[in-house]
Length: 297
Length: 325
Image (tube, rainbow over all chains, first blue to last red):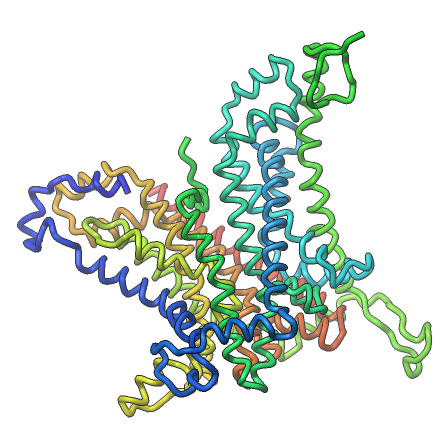
């Protein structure tokens, strides 16, 4: 926000043009942004309130009037099909947590090599990896399913985990971050001291890359947590479903039995909650600037 | 003999000296980047290159059924040439799905990026209040899975539970069916706009903040209004990020799958083949015709590449023309 204060220099010529309060609040931007925030928060506010309603209240009371059934809804959700809901949450945490961790590791080591080392075929390799971003997921997911079926791996945890480890975008971010954060002379000094390349990477470069890798981790965590298509194609056993797929099947059944609607709504609220909380807690550590490729060097 | 204590072994040579000769260091430094890239390369081959190659291969094959199709050997895979492609191109369902997605994209991309740019400019303006709060609130939907977003909005579109309909009812106004016909496009577009605006806003806002303040000073001294500064200075300077967000939005739009799939249980007017990707899924797993599905998938991938790169080239040409002026 420091750049904003820089703009505050007093424009003497501009005062006549705009007689409005110079020191007050800029109304148009503030109101526009508040309207935007309202629009974005509305469905979230709705689900928070709707999750407190019992089945009968959902269809009878005013939408934004809290109900009385929250604890009941949560316990109903917990007992639905022997607690399969919490199994879905656990699965999502596993897919996203482990997948993002492995993804950050692969991105770190590849991004570092692409940024620091000079070797033949470097740019070609990088471009080929990046082209992966452009591939529509379904173009990949259908043949991935067929190939994994040949290896007898479909409908397993691995079938959802493995295809999501390599993130072309993660490699790209790690590369630009390593190029900016790891000085070439530090690497050179390590070589002079006789340290091996792997040791230089793990002991010297990796600690310098941590902030960038946090971004890669979070980016991939969100991508995996939010993924629907891949598990939708790969899995049939609902004990292995992530939360997105689980909620979808719940909604599908709810179409014939509206009594399940309260479960879907409560489930949606609880599914949004951890990710939003995660965001609020770590947004200060997350260098969003990286998303647009801007790195302060 | 006591070899120097080494916590990690980092060379295959196992040389018993702590300081390897310059030649071995150099050799290691040469092979190291390739070794570092092995995990990424293996994963890329297994989960990107191989599936793409396999899909293309499948798209040129078909299953020939002889006799009644019973018994082993009755179904065999044979070469199909371009048959699957001509089939896909003359498939009216795929074509109408593509048209639907084009219409949807013509709403989503301009509205989403327009709002993202508007909010980014507002965040970057002077004397704006509550900016950290509103920025976070507008970014928040990024953390909500597409399926859950579609589910939330889906309920908000249902007359029985929606606050909008409650208000309309109270005012005695007619209640439109949001999940049918033309409004369905708006309903679906709204979900995508809601989910994507914040992320694009952050990308553009970051680019705006990178503009040095001195750039505005001269314009301000000349008495330029904030609107003029935004239109003449800020927007041209963030053009590269606008191009980037546009590029990724086109790709994402052509691949729409989650939102219409999630709305399907709530309405009868979303067909199982509403978008091209849904049609691919339906053909591959509903009908079990993986060859037709593979041809369609390849066509969609090609269309995505042509559209997105065509856009990038057009954008580049414009930037060059402007630079030449």
